[in-house]
Image (cartoon, rainbow, N blue to C red; front, side, top):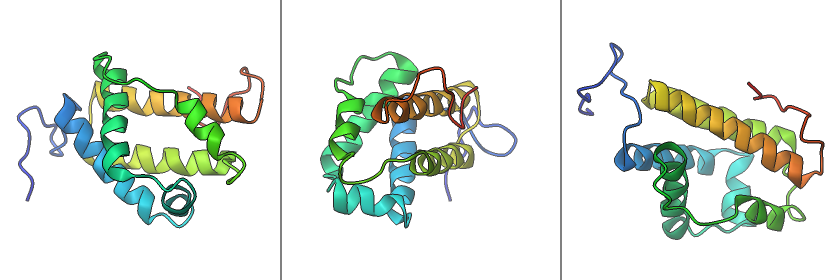
Length: 145
């Protein structure tokens, strides 16, 4: 049984407060991605992700997003563009990624940072999808707020 954090809500969920929480979120989220019949093969067979290398970089990304640590250096668009010829990276795939991400956040966290990370994930997915497929930036995706 998990320890309930001191800042937990009545349902036992706390907000995302630091690197440890981000690592927990990223580990659980990508465990569900790898089990997903649509997304799992993209990550494991097409992109052939080295999880030992990739997970800490993803934690750096989200830590920079939430806490402005500056620990992430990279270009997510370039990484996704590299895969475009090998997988469609269509709206349905991005929506599936966002559904899994949001449900993972909701299952484990509650609070301002939890809400913010979901909004950023939606914005990021919309921008990456739009740029990959050369869609006008003013065309909102499913997760536009």
